Image (cartoon, rainbow, N blue to C red):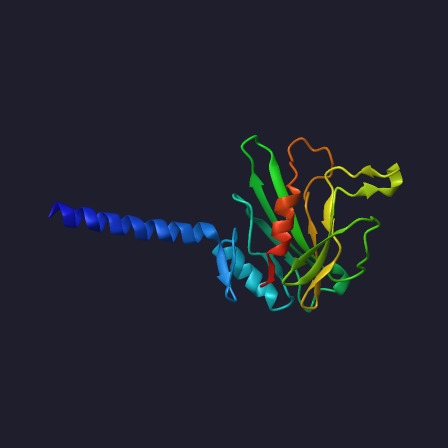
Length: 193
């Protein structure tokens, strides 16, 4: 009898562990898994998908989760007032925050003024990444804590990646950069929702 109880307890533990791992891992849509997205956030993203295409990463560094989804879309919203942004973040052991965002653009899109973009290939096509580029306004000194891509398309919607999102100051002591290697992996993993 003890062996049967132990086996039952073991099986129940496995079921609960698998359930918890599935919840922590993220949500699935269209056959792809999108880590760090809660079920409520996925519902919000799927509602926005009815209005615009959405790009999301299928790989995230450990600990990253969607912090917020900001959506101002729809027929009643003028094109120059439309907004859509998904913000991801994680807290590091040293207390600093790492944060990035994927932002849609609907009007007045332009190119960045920097040279030396690194080209990343993703399922959405080529993405041009500027990771601490040389600043032409400061005689080519590295632009500290600056990470951004040129606009890239997910369907008919343009997006860009902002790698040091949410800080007005480039020397914010509470923020930390995401490594270039992890930034590239995030971008390579992008898929359309």
